Amino acid sequence: MRRLMVAGNWKMHGTRASVAELIEGLRNQVLPSGVEVAVFPPCLYASQVIDGLKGKSIAVGAQNSAVEPLQGALTGEISPSQLVDAGCTLVLVGHSERRQIMGEGDELLNRKFAAAQACGLTPVLCVGETLEQREAGKTLEVVGRQLGSIIDELGIGAFVNAVVAYEPVWAIGTGLTASPQQAQEVHAAIRAQLAVENAEVAQGVRLLYGGSVKAANAAELFGMPDIDGGLIGGASLNADEFGAICRAAGN
Ligand code: PGA
Image 1 (cartoon, rainbow, N blue to C red):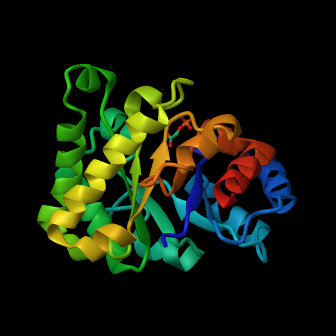
Image 2 (image 1 turned 135 degrees about the horizontal axis):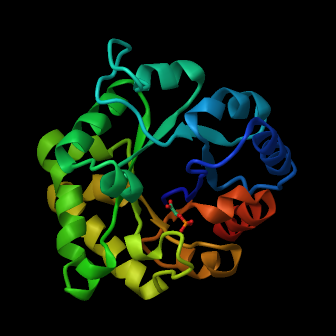
């Protein structure tokens, strides 16, 4: 049985004061023990969040990390080893906002994924199609290519300790959620692609859905056989809403 995961991607939101409030709100949540809960604050606030959440079982991750594992001359970047040193255990790789706005491509993301894993971080690989690609019937091709890039470069073993998040770009921050059936179709295809290489690894990998998940639609999505939790953006900035999504995963 895969343990469900609910992860909050805070994106570029927060101030020291609002982060303190969110920490307080999260501390007050009753979280289901069977669900792995994580938050991804802006790196600047990672230490504040890690200290603030001490004793609460919520993991903390980063939204991005460098292509090189160790510290060195790479202005503006944060290495995976530094994230580990700070107490992070996870890192997002290839969120669509970074693919689209920062121009991050598969080759660069392969390096980030490998560097993160080399330091013991669990990469959360984000994949997903744009509306144009979906309308052109290319969803599975696009997602297959993004996933295949890691498989080809790093091998199926890379997924023994990794999470995949399917996030259709058209559903992110738009209020348009993929229907549970639409999401399940892509999740099943992702698992099948992994299973071609190794069935056991494929069965063990958590596949999260992301894109306008809220407390009101979470249970239905998490009820699908290949949806193992969610990556939550906007709704994760509200502790009560995020807590409710975590509890939906626990039922
Ligand atoms: P959203 O974002 O929940 O605000 O749609 C999800 C994400 O980008 O991870």
